[in-house]
Length: 431
Image 1 (tube, rainbow, N blue to C red):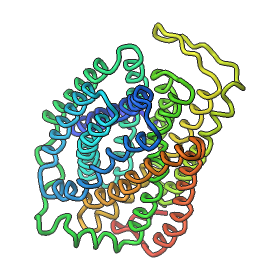
Image 2: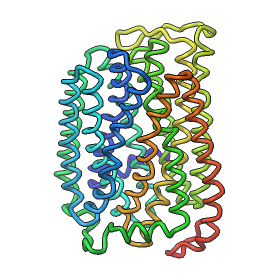
Image 3: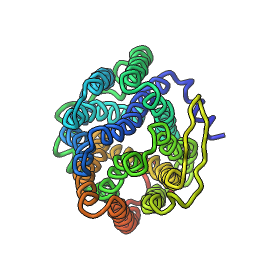
């Protein structure tokens, strides 16, 4: 029923346009993750270089996130969305031309710029234009459509890469992105969220003011540590499946689809729960714990490979042989999806609520992204180097350790922040 409630939001033309933004962005992101596994296998890269695939993407985002937040606060968000679409089309053209691992790193930097524009601007606009009493539903549904598009990217993108190769796949992604571009042109208002005085929006003082809020500090600290582990998982799980077990792009897409399906089907429901029960920090902690647990089970793929009888699965004219490694990775990624579905709507809602206290939602979202990007820059290289010098499985265990540490610290700091926070500004109880 909640899923159909999310579908019902598409009757709002502006939400439909923003859902198209999430769809194009997330589908491209998940398809390219599978492509990175193929590039790693094709170019025989080390764990350190594979880590650079993630670090290059995140480094550009780290550099642009703060000025981008200010620009969105003071300018026309619609124009930034349109620019992000065009940059992503340039990314697809660039990936068609790559012939070395260095080229992949460079194009990933451009992808980081385009993804930052679409993510920060899209999420900010959704938070700004959503009704006050339905913010959790809008944000949860927005992420639900992003998860559905990631699911499509895993299945369709994996199939296209497996059957038709890189060029045809990137051509399809370009068409989808241009379709979303047209939706925004046609349906989104000219100045979504309005514009603030540049002297009042997203300056250093705004960030300092936001960081005086105990809950926002707890969230920023949590995301900083959590990102070390999560971004390494996102980059290395597809590469692990390809280089260690020889799984095809299509099979890797199925693994990733398991997590995206659980995430897509439950995220809107969890968004409604946060609206109803409040105490969003508990949802964040529960989802983070499940994500750490799922990450810790990834190395079991090496144990189960050869211990489970392979199964031949025929689909869309192709037969895949799936064994123990596939089953273990599919289960682990499904658990990761459940964890994210619990954590993400609550986390976004908390950031929007905190930003509202200083009328700077985009600035709060920028801090949300900034705290993530710092760990995203260092995490993949650190985990990749561990994989080079110890083992691939040890790298995933280290990632799980970062995730568990982040969760434990957040439980302590968020409980204290919630106690200090008191009643919410609109007088609606959050208990």
